[in-house]
Image 1 (cartoon, rainbow, N blue to C red):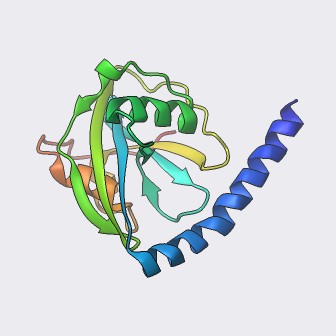
Image 2 (image 1 turned 90 degrees about the vertical axis):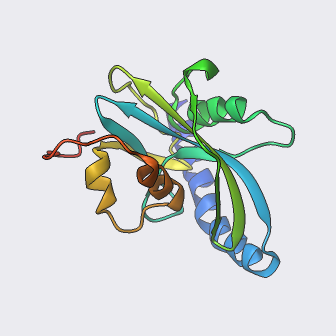
Length: 170
């Protein structure tokens, strides 16, 4: 059973890697708009970031909303699908909606934040999200190639951060 799951994830990862450049080309031609969700999960001062199989750089857990889907429900779904984290919708604090253009798409991203007392055990889906890590926000600010939604969340943070950050921790 585990072997079949690994094979399925490998095939899904291949589809993401092959399909993403095609999707970006289509977006360049059509300049579509999309609505999505993203969440900054913060535990012990560090934020959870994901490493996607098809995109370089770091980002937040998130994704597209299904037609008619409530943003909180969509965020809960994305957390469970991408990293195996089950959170109640009432744990999500609503942040301002981000409006941006990225990869030739106009994006409207419902942004959330959730504070957890400790870093939970996570299970990346292995296809879309291949790894997760925890970082101090201050160290992420200096990181090149962040997804603009993660950069937007970092830019919105007003609270002071520790002078020394230490390592990334996993």
